[in-house]
Each structure stands twice: as C-alpha cells, then as structure tokens.
Length: 465
Ligand code: F6P
Image (cartoon, rainbow, N blue to C red; front, side, top):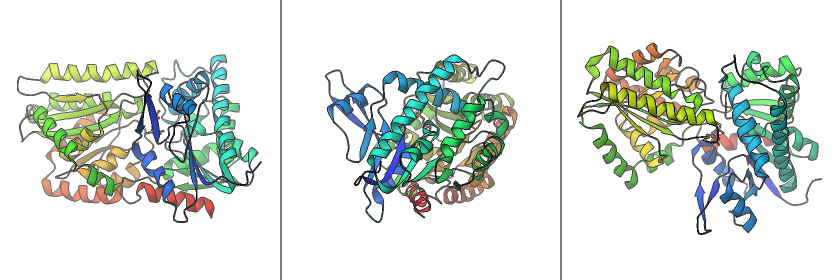
C-alpha cells in the first residue's frame, strides 16, 4: 500500500555510498565508497526541485550490520540487514557466480555451469534478497515516487515492486554488458524468463551502450515475446572531469607520483599503465602475456619501458577470484625474473587499493592498457585521458562498452589476441607526441560527454516523463 509520506526519489543498489568497519575495540569507522556508481548516484541529492531522496542498499559485512543494529547511519541512506547466509548466497552464489558470469561470458563451458539443486537453493536466496529490497522501497516511497534500481543484483526488484506499488515510476539500470541470446539461454528456462520479466516490470530500462540494450531486447524477443510496455534507453556514463582534475593535483597524489617515478627508475622510460579490480573479465593475465611478448620480440624495449599494473583484490570470497589474483602475481613475477636486471623492474605490480596512487599512475602514463574480455563500460579508459599529464595512447578492447565512444581514437584490440595486443602496445609506445596529444584531447572530450550527475538526472527525467 502506498504510504502518505516518504521519499520522492529512491535509488536501490547492492553496494551503498557508505560502509562501516567494525574495529577490535567496537568502534565503527565510516568509509565512503568511490567509483562511477557512487559519484553518479550522489546526484540524487542534487535534484533541482529539491525532492526528498533515499538510497536503499545492503549491509555488506559485520560493520554495516552492527551500524544498522546501533541505528548509526547517514541521512538518506537506508541499509538493509539481510540474513548473512541469504545475502552470501544471493551476492556470491547467484549475482557474482552466475549472472556476472553469464553477462561477461566467463564460463568454461565443458565443466560449468551446472544448474542443479544447489543452484536452486541459492536462487531462493536471490529471490528473498530481491524481495527485501522491493519491500523496503515500497515502504519508503511517496505516492508516485521515482525509483531507480541498479544492476544485476536486483533484476527481480522492478517486477516485485510493481506488484506492491502500482503507483510508482520504476527504472532499472544495468552497469554490465548483457549476454547474447545463445549464451543467456544457458540459464534454465524458468530462471531466464523470471529475470527478463522481473526487469520488464520497470517502466524504463537503461543500459550503458546500444550494444547491451540490443542484446537485452533480443533476449526478450526470443524468450518472453518482446519488451512491450517498457521503454529502453542508453546512457553512456562518463568520467567526472571536474572532480578528477582537482583530485589528481592534491598533495597525496604528488607524493605517490614521486614514489612511482622512483620505482620506474630513469626519466626516459616509457610507462604502460593498467588499473583494475582483479576481476576475471578484466583480462589482466593476457595483458601481462602481451607485454611479455613485446619484450620477447622487441628487445629494443628492454630497460626502456615499465608496465605499472595495479590489480586491486575483488570478490575474494570466491575461490576462482582468489586463484586468478594469485595467477596475476605469479605471471608478473615470472616476467620480472625472465627479463629484469639490477637496474630495471619490467613490471611494477601493486595490489593494495589506493585511489591517489591510481591517479598518479594515470598522470604519468604514456600508454593505458584496457583489454577486458567484456565490460559494461570501463571507466579507467575514460579517466586516464582526462588526468594524463602529457597525453596518453589508449590500447582498448573492442569488447569494452567504452569502445563505442572511444574506439576512433584508440588502438583497438581483440582481447584474446595476445600477439595483436603486443603489436598495439608497440604502436602506442612509438606514437609521436603530437599525435598522442591529439588523440588524448579527443578521448577526454568523448569520455566526459556525460558526467555522472547528468547521467543520473537524464535517467530520472526520462523516467518522470
Ligand atoms: O559493473 C557492475 C558493478 O556493480 C559496478 O557498479 C561495480 O564497479 C562492480 O560491479 C563492483 O562489484 P562489487 O560490488 O562486487 O565489488
């Protein structure tokens, strides 16, 4: 039933704008999240009409749960304390092990996936987790409010919420790619149908690129008879130029810049930078192999180039992510022991997440390597040209959403083709300063065409219309 008061704008996402660490002494330390989703959705507070807003998110760990129990929180943020086992099955067991794998086409299909009783049990948790969000949104929303639901974690929420509150304007935005029909239908038929119908409960669906919107539409046409009644829009989330330019000139970034320069050694060395979560779809190991091939086939680069690779741990509850993280370190060490000398470390790998150091690396990059197997957008590709001090050539996978907007000014690669990636790295390294500066200028303009706040407000306005 519609409440008589409540919020006029609501956002729902698994990860919220703030999370809490529980100290050994029982203190709670609030950490504000980063990334495109957070900066985009922060515009929730900038509605020109001053509408009241609420952000509904999940309590992710012990610190968040303790904060909910103690009633600690930020105004406008409602954290849901979902049973930890239900949450783990929904987030790790379905969202990240099944839906993420389907949309990024990550399964090694002779062995995986297996959809049996264990999967069904986890699916029940995914439904319960989605229902908890739908019920919280229904309780928090003012009559006729606009609700923007985020991502594959919450694919069932639009349909469930529609069942509870017919008066709401409901939107859903996908930050991932969408799987092609033949891959999507690996899912059991009833589950595939439930996911699509769940999303089609929204008035409006948003995707990062035309390509992902089209694959979603094709899945609906093949499996549930189309998308009738639901509008579909494309909103290519861009980099936040103002924030990045200011943030990347602060003293902590300057400090990191000095430290990185020391690690690179020698002012004349070229720098190839990559910055990723250690995510299976980011293709870090093939990127390292391409760099290794460059050193093997073009010895003129020995002592003259350094690959600065930041691979920040992600989803470490999942064994496959832990294994991949270990493999990234192993391959980096292998390259260093194969080619390194007393005066040259070919790969400088950092695994501790440090945003200031990422910005420092962006500033000094001669080449940025962004080679995902498949990626909804990839904001690193958009951020580097904005921050770069002297211009940076971009080696970009054609499977990243960012390719649609940046492809004309990048060296585009098939992410599986390690030989072609090595060649593209070479071409990027030898690009003349003038050409590089021209490309960087155009890349930065394309990358910032739709800043996060505008990205969010565009969707909100389209939903309210
Ligand atoms: O790309 C989809 C997404 O939900 C992003 O919004 C976010 O950067 C990423 O996945 C984070 O994943 P997780 O919350 O599992 O760390």
